[in-house]
Length: 258
Image: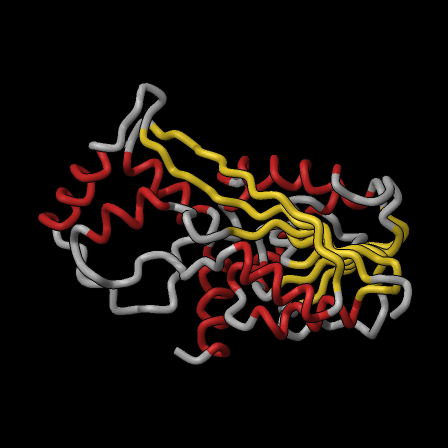
């Protein structure tokens, strides 16, 4: 699948999740709070919320910025955000082609939006372009190892790709350093627990995270479903069925020499 087709499919998936996203985004919201704490200053200046979704973090950012712009590729997400914050500016767009002028923002806030982008090199250059000298990009992105339990149980069924191909820490950081950023980061492993397998899958679907670039993932017959469920049940702990997120938390600084 071509990158443009993939991004269109991702946007459609998030359109479908627009009305349910805030019911399931507890983990994302918690990481957004952590991300804000990594800012150079409590004053974010002119701020871009990249991949703003239904306005999940708009209120947090509005408290600390001079000017706010929310950007998301999914029209449905922007519609939900505009209902909640009609006074705020939102634009449709993607991290590969940010609808903004050069050096427009003191802070770019990207909470779990960049792992969907097929061309991380273009993303890094775009973020560098729209960030002012001395400005910062605060980003969370998912790494290889995310949803490892799900990948494992699916691999017992077939050799098809059932989650997106997450990148390594080294790969992500290298692209942003090449673009010109100073990178400070840490990796956080977080695990959610669910009582039922159906609830776990509903959670993934509810935040739009069920899209993969490989569309032919095989027919989910009752037999395959039961095998998948049985295999995942073997991973149950005293806390429930685990779902692991491997998160790169990074602060990117555009040096004042630029």
